[in-house]
Length: 308
Figure 1 (spheres, rainbow, N blue to C red):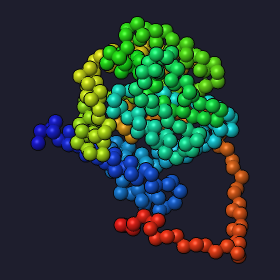
Figure 2 (figure 1 turned 90 degrees about the horizontal axis):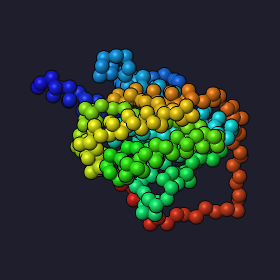
Figure 3 (figure 1 turned 45 degrees about the vertical axis):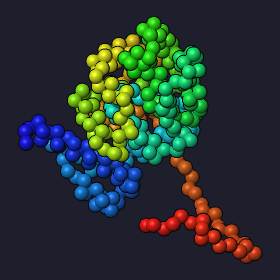
Figure 4 (figure 1 turned 90 degrees about the vertical axis):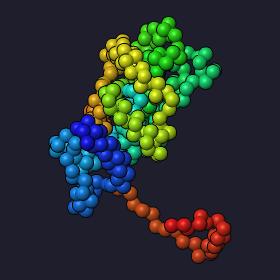
């Protein structure tokens, strides 16, 4: 096996491990006892680059950060804040993975994700930003946009779904639109997830060979591979023309998925002077018993067949 093939095999193996770790993330709770540490012992392998950054550290740190996100959530509700976070980047850059980790343990009534489909024929005739406005937060809400109005500066421009005149109008209007949002009391944070050409190629390959992920790979994704340089030029102009003091861009190095998730969540938390909201202890009420009530048997045909 050549060195190139060996490196490819190692990277594919790392992707498979990442899929496995994702299953663990939903099961593990950082209760601080020895049992939790023992449960993670088998994950204590070094990272692919030989550093101390390993899977065990990642899972511990992720759960710690998610606990901080819960504190942030409570503080946002108490303070009545309105928060918007934009996640932009190339296809397979890891935006969805970070969003999933942010929302994983939060209240969906407080923190929600917006991922709009392609505009309808009617929406195409509206003011460009109009279809995004109804999804903006009210007081005590956090909205995460999995792609946003920056579609116009990226995929729409590169794929020819809009004219250069419309792109130019976007670049003039977007900063003013965002200043209006900030002026109305919205906290606006914008992230761009950056990956290499080689890394995107690998992630597309993994999606293409995984039956559980093939749905993520669309003809548009494949076309984006061919137009890599066009996307790069579009991204560079977008960052340059829409990086404003009121709503600046933050670039997340996303080749390493685990580091990208931790770095992004940690940075997001640092954007707020939040504090832990102490909740009063909950006293469980006594169970009410009604002697006259007789519980009726559930008909057998209503039950799901117990195959397992």
